[in-house]
Image (tube, rainbow, N blue to C red):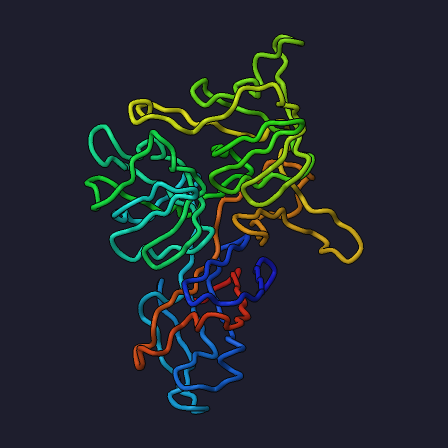
Length: 374
């Protein structure tokens, strides 16, 4: 039977770390071909792997080279292939101790053990007191997109090289970082502002991916402490009760956007909050507004017939959502689901890694069958 079955295929280039593949369904069977490992035939390579839901989560049956061009079978029993389906609320990974944060722009965070993050992951931090009156609690609770610089280090898009911040050191008690497992359940969502450049147009830098598109209608929520409150959508002195909105005129990158509001005469933005001000601190935010808030994809000659809306968590790489076609500009529900290929090793040879080596090209297929025999 295949009337209601679903299937998908794709490819990616391995980083050597676990790979998340988002799909519009949660598969019950996954298979992949590591084209690079297949071509080399080198010892310990894993050219093919298979997973069925009846095996349980986190396992896989694999082919591996036990010597050059000598193929055998094996299993991966932990950190193999798993499926996932995110809920409607944010979920978090395990707490990781923070050993230090620098006074710098951008700030560098160092963890007490390997953090396991990848560039583009979103994290939140808590604690961040160096003493009862010093440290960086001002940035606790903000979602940050990280850029990984080492196994225990990453940077965040925030300027801590300011007078009100004290560098963290010595693994302060209560200072932790947690990964946000599925940060873009809806987008563009609400994004925290890290800096504002005023002028004839207004440039906004955010702490995580804004996922805005040119033509987007946006509003601002800026508490008095942060300055530049003139951007706020209310009150509208010209038409009382009618909010003031701006439009995105340029998207510089994943966390920088230009809005058509002339802010030349507006007060300056500041993120130099004191530790005392961090208690109950509300952050400055930019939000999408209206009935149609973030992008669909044009159907044109040569395009996919039913393109999914896309989001850009970091850099310039866009990822398709789990959705079908959307009205250009519509607010997208991106509740995540799909599968993960882990970095587990073969039971018969710990040198054989399921996800392969960095730069390996992997082709995958995923299925959800409408009938399964018991």
